[in-house]
Image (tube, rainbow, N blue to C red; front, side, top):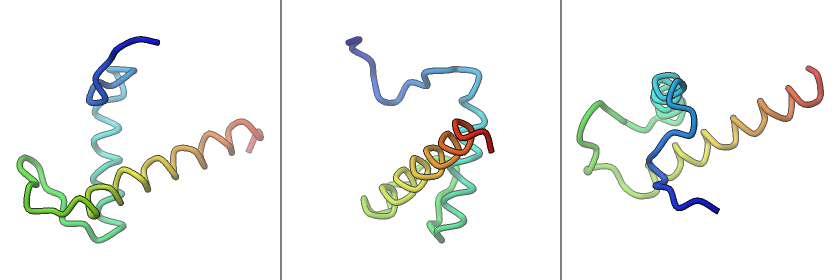
Amino acid sequence: MTNSSSNRTAVPEAKEALNKFKYEVASELGVPLKEGYNGDLTSRQNGSVGGYMVKKMIEQQEKQMAGK
């Protein structure tokens, strides 16, 4: 297993799309995420954005694997 930072994008070309996706998810969840400093947000708010992103990515991958 490689020793890599969790902040590194595995596919650098996807970084911009992932960032856009993050803000879309935050908006859907009502989390006031903004460019720059977000230290005023709670861990729960930030975690909900990341968790929902993962959930949506898994759903998309499952659909793709099922041929839908």
